Length: 135
View 1 (cartoon, rainbow, N blue to C red):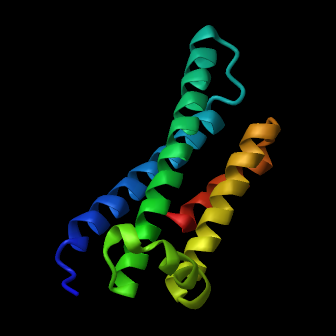
View 2 (view 1 turned 180 degrees about the vertical axis):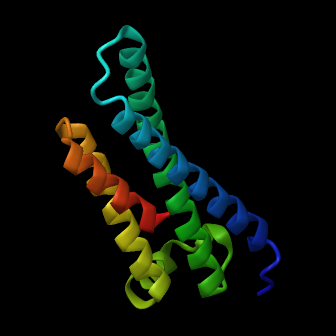
């Protein structure tokens, strides 16, 4: 099977993933920097950063799934819409799949931690350190 149709899809998915991760790290950086600000401006910026974090998390998750699907189709040498069966094999039997699982697990932990508790300074630093290797 010719790889040419997959190249633009892979480049697009990787680019979207990188943009999403950059937005995640940026929003966490803003939240970290404004953690002690008590002014109205700081409060408004924190609200905007929380909204950006939510959008970036969804964006990153969708981009990661698109990349996985494209990679599965490419590895199985099947059309893109027939790659559903190959996704499981890619996840369980390839280094790409293992790295993808680790990245998604880190992303989910980041989202859950940010969603269900107001993180402390140490936790925000750990989340940022967790997000950087995934990027």
